[in-house]
Image (cartoon, rainbow, N blue to C red; front, side, top):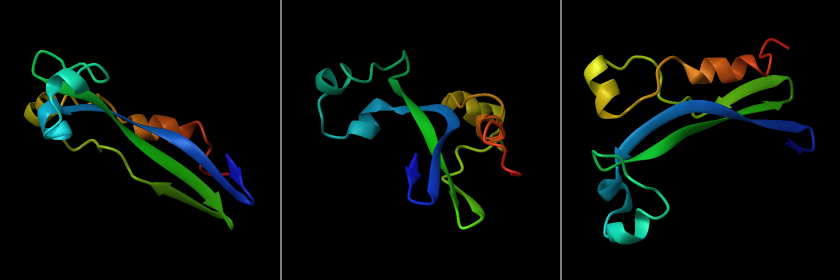
Amino acid sequence: MHLGEIEVFYLDGGSFALDGGAMFGVVPKVLWEKKSPPDEKNRIHMRANSLLVRAAGKTIVVETGNGTQWDPKLRAIYAIQDGDPLIDSTGRHQLGS
């Protein structure tokens, strides 16, 4: 997307899962599970969406995703996507140019 001389691109920061009840609070499960069906652990699928902004000769990443420093136990609890999807996504936008 272009906003004048500013370019904005979507970056995939990966996926993870959080407890649906915690995310929706007092909203009854029968309402939110229609839009965000939970898994067997009552977690809903979430995305770590990031933006790449280019303006005035600068490149800026807004929101850097989940990172890669999760131990296996926490990676399993939060169903954090393997690898580093943000690096893969930024590579498609040729950050060096």
